Image 1 (cartoon, one colour):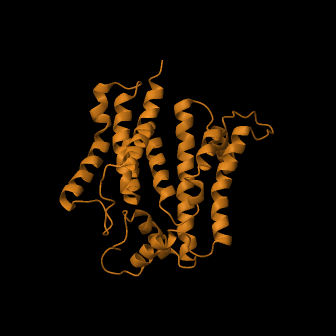
Image 2 (cartoon, rainbow, N blue to C red):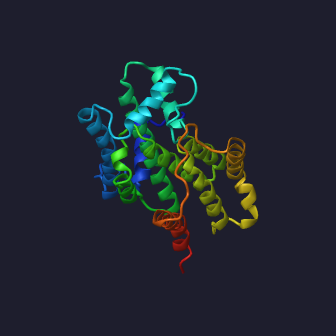
Image 3 (cartoon, rainbow, N blue to C red):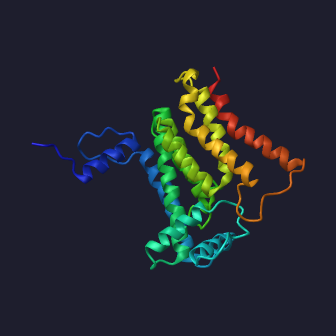
Length: 278
């Protein structure tokens, strides 16, 4: 006969893959690593629950995003002039809202943020396990509780979805699915155009990878180069990558510029420096 795999067995195999357990067919207790996964998911869903049940009104910067979503949902002409980012996140909420109209729009927007961030956490866990060859529970939990992430994982914000899509793109790039990586990274740029910086990071990553020869770098980077070239064409044609009238602050040399430059160098360079240590 043909061997079949029950849904519960398939789910258990995925669980063991993430948890780093082989399983012996008998009963087994959850490991510390698995509890870290549970905690990471719990923190993310917990923030959504807190905002859903206790923060019924729009919080902090949510009114700006919700106004843009309402603008697109109402079919108003033109672009919201106050938008400092591309409307990928807002289009996703509008598309889901047209498929079902029973859920409150703010709740739907927050749920989209939470769902995309959970996808990013899963991509990070799988990428970490592939790169380091060991369970990623603790690292995934540390990512989930970062102060720059966890408060926004359940809000109508673009911070968490933008980072999550970058993590999915990094996972795809690491496993060799380079066309998928470029497509997802394009989606990340559609949420926040500043994610274009990761095109350069991925190109440097491919160039410095010790497991692949540099002679194939151009072929391996074709999709990323196409994405970067497309962005350059848009900037040269339109003069910007924003839709509204907010285009960022005027560049002036001050302490904030030095701090940002040092932080950017640290974020992009530290992983490469550590990898190059003897």
